[in-house]
Length: 297
Image (cartoon, rainbow, N blue to C red; front, side, top):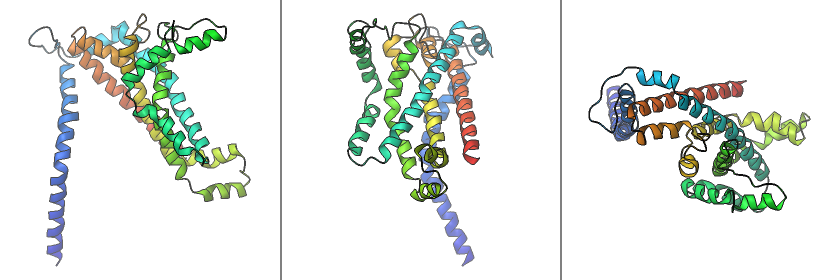
């Protein structure tokens, strides 16, 4: 009987491996193999304008240390992330809290807030370009009607990153709001009742003593995914500013794209891409560890 049970367990285990093998192979081919190929190319002088390539060691990575464009793109990316992340976290959280206890029109409001998520960012970027037009845009029409000077949202080096952050926040608010709503729904009402007995009957007391601690796992997920989204900025830059004006909106991924497909320096572009992967991984890991420590405490 015992041998038969062990045989059945081994058969089930082999079946599980066989069923998981196609998905594992697909992940290997689609994700891991390209990453390994990029890492290998980053140690070469591979270019699209000539045949063959040579091993150059760490030359591409040394070039990054002296490349002013690399430093500028990295700084732009972090400035953009600093503008984007607080708004992409706080605004959806506030909306979720406001909608949680709202029963009338809640479904309609959820759909309206979620609509930008279902829209194609490339198409919506063109709509935002029209809205932010320095001469005929609706936003500048409102600004001038109030007696202020028109704003060159996408052509002023001082505010172009802020304008791009507005577009990105608009596109992600609905997704993060739904995540926070799911987290709020999972909080047992008895916790609020117990907190009220202890004297936490005000909105702020309820939030800081019950809601915020219980939203720890959801907050961690939202923070990490929003951070990755911030560093992945490319679409709106490529469509609206092309890194301008005067490289003020040239973010990291757009620099890597330009090096690879405009200047054909694929070896250097591969080094930039691998460094980008490490930066995002370390930033997300630090953020997840910090948030996990906060949740445990």
